[in-house]
Length: 181
Image (cartoon, rainbow, N blue to C red; front, side, top):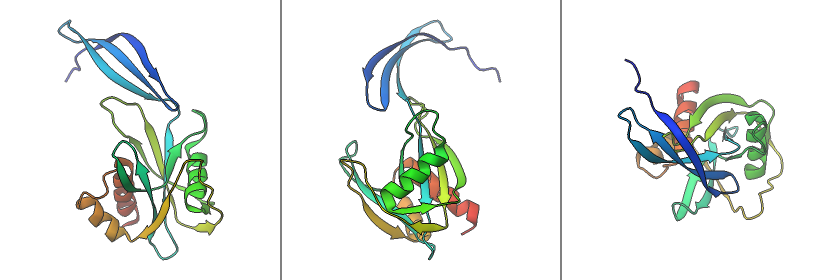
């Protein structure tokens, strides 16, 4: 089936943030009408990691998320330092910063586009299965509690609607599928 032609007429910067820029896109639709669409550009991209403890439990982070006005349970993640930083390096850094563990053999798990309707954010997710104790060093203003959970507990929390973070849901399910647990 042939895709209808859409054309961006112009893009206007509405807000420049620390990691996000917000634009208004003016799109010409196949019927010739012009429509204004929101577009959010994530300037750097991100990486995340599923940290697996020696006993098989997954080490999760609990942190406050302003957009939801509540604490969430998530896998460790963060923005790349630059658009060219390899996501594996970012995942390794975030693992150590947020959990106090490192891993010398991160395994690629999945690539995600978090909200394709209006944002270009890309998150590469890795599994860290041979954790080495290191030192947690949170970013300024970052407050995280660590919680180990079994894969079964995490799946139950997903199906109960407790865990709603898209990268975490996708990562947990991908990990479960890949490793046949």
